[in-house]
Amino acid sequence: MDSEQLREYGHQMVDFVADYYKTIETYPVLSQVQPGYLRELLPDSPPVHPEPLQNVLDDVRSKILQGVTHWQSPGYFAYFPSNSSVAGFLGEMLSAGLNIVGFSWISCPAATELEVIVLDWLAKLLKLPEAFMSTGKGGAVIQGTASEAVLVALLGARDKMLKKFGKESMGKLVVYTADQTHASVQKACQIAGIYPENIKILKTDSMSEYALSPEVVSEAISQDAASGLIPLFLCATVGTTSSSAVDPLLGLGKIAKTNGTWFHIDAAYAGSACICPEYRHYLDGIEEADSFCMNAHKWFLTNFDCSVLWVRDRTALIESLSTYPEYLRNKASEANAVVDYKDWQIPLGRRFRSLKLWMVLRLYGQEGLQSYIRNHISLAKRFEEFVRQDSRFEVITPRKFALLCFRLLPPPNDENQGDKLNRELLEAVNSTGMIFISHTVLSGKYVLRLAVGAPLTEERHIDTAWEVLQEKATTLLKPYRN
Ligand code: PLP
Image 1: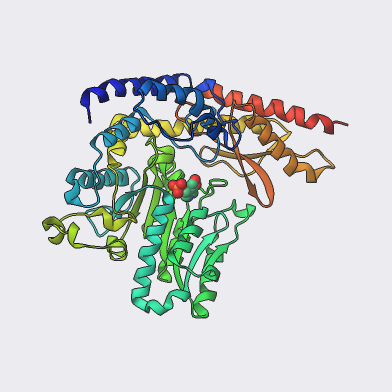
Image 2: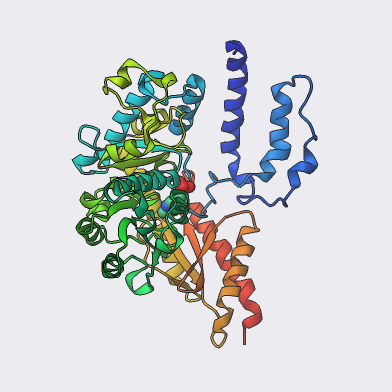
């Protein structure tokens, strides 16, 4: 490591990234390249001799950026956001600079201790129950993604249950999800060895705004219990991926508790909004949860990756995921005086990710973060009003956060053209390069999704998005006139 070279190259790289942000609106939001484009542009083998940074940056400019979908563009409205901020960026930089591997306390005491403190801070912002704080029996850990978070929660739940009923009960363990639950739960079940027939995907509908009904869960659990199965794990969502539906936590949590079922809450997207008092009620019922996850890397200004998992009983995770080989033994761990995060996750090695979250919390403060969330929600409301004022469109589900699900109505007498029309509209607007939106299917209908959440998005970008949608809709509807 040559410090002077780092200084020189580091300045150039920061300049490069700052210029990127300054000019981000000049790039098509959704990359317009074809599969395999990069192989045509790069050599077959690495260079034999060292190259100057400038050559690499030139290639980034001319070859890489055209293949980048610009998640930080103010015209980015697809999927859910993945926020970047100066604070998050600097935290990442510092983490790369220190480059520690903090698997156990002794491997980097500050990494472990900062993570514990910062996650307690975040728990306070979210007004989580005391049980989730490090001072009680629970605690929190930063995972890479919500997928890893639900997997480790499920492994903890599984092993606790198998301890009670014996390993031969594996085939009896049942996991309950909704048809709106993120696919990461299905994947977690596959990895955890849940029998495919024991993964129950319960139906939701438009009447309940795609939230999971406690009655449906209760009935499924009763039937399973009556036939000798073991209700292991129930996953509820606050802010579903398709339409940001919110499952009724209190009702679901009570059913889980009565049946000895682990209750996990996935608030990967909408958890961030719950730091605002006016949205905190969406977490009512969290008192019943065994685990809760929120992605700070989605809508909390913390650069990817940073998914926070809180658990009520940390021993469930630790008992499931601990290993203690000789080469990792040390006095602090043996005295049980410290947190060793290697036992709360799948890999051994881990980055100093709490630095970026700490930076975000300090450089924005509670007020800054709340107004950030509120601004996006009011921009989404603005978009919703535009859609509601145009009778050619319909809003599909009531907007709760900053995601709107909507659809261009098919022409009268041509109802079955609806899906085709909306597919074409999606293609048409995304190929302009001005905006990028995504889609889902709700009640069998192809639906457009516009999620406001890029840090640079302002009113004018919402207005442009709507203009682009209107213009393309007019063109698409032309052949249907008369
Ligand atoms: N849960 C919800 C509700 C999501 O919307 C997503 C992704 O968008 C995930 C989980 C998976 O997130 P990750 O990529 O962090 O695994």
